[in-house]
Image (cartoon, rainbow, N blue to C red; front, side):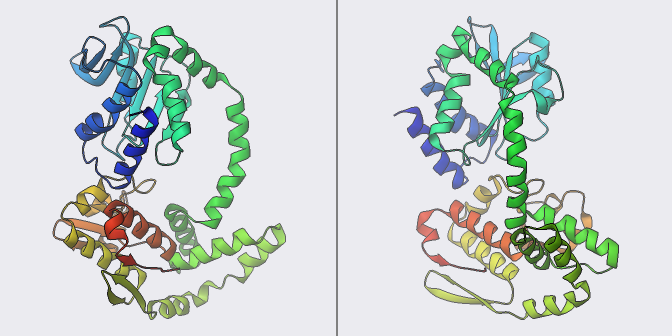
Length: 361
């Protein structure tokens, strides 16, 4: 089986939330990739697991010559790699290891610890296996991590060249407007909450996230500054209560295994679908929780305070226990809820997905 096939299989398993622990990521993702990249994974003098550094351990040390680390790999649970760079850099600095990799199986961050600047600035490249196509993933993994490339020094040379390449800065500059328009076109939940918070600060009334979503979509459609100003002036926040009450009176229907269900809100649709999927598959909630969720939060967690970090008010008001021991966040716009449901159906797998028909937009 080729590296491309391995990556393709990993993408399918990631979408279904099959990697629920660090050990699963190591055994099911990291080692198969290293094997296909030419590393002798059964030779512990070259691929050393639990490598000791000053009484602590890094998950994998790739060695050349044997027993001399040249690459460190730190493995985390899917969606849990944020903030782990410091520990990895301490390991690398202590032994002078020139390349360090932090991965949760889905995201692969390649670092040059010896360069200058904050941790983020020393990252050469971030590879998201679910966002990049197989060819791009294969190219990057091979360039930075293939056994022959690491041993010959070309992997480090390529990484340093990429780090210094000014094209990255130009790419960021050209991507910023696209990213902004993408946020306006399909608003992220954090952006919506920031907007809602600011409206409440200014006028004392908090808009629904659906209202904020529609405002940003309208803003995206209008290109000129004058139109943007007009939209801002026309946004009648005093009428938000009417908007909210109208929408909460809407009826939503969805089909599950041939049976039609009726719900009073998009949030109720999402909650019911999670309950039905959990009843059909006892592993569904665990697998969904193992997926990468929002930028700063979890959609589903065993502790409701993980759903809205730093916002205990939202934890109390907008969290529902879908089944005993599992909490689902509900403070989302209709657009975001549709995306969460799509993610849930992706995790559930193609057989269950075919049995569900739901459209909120």
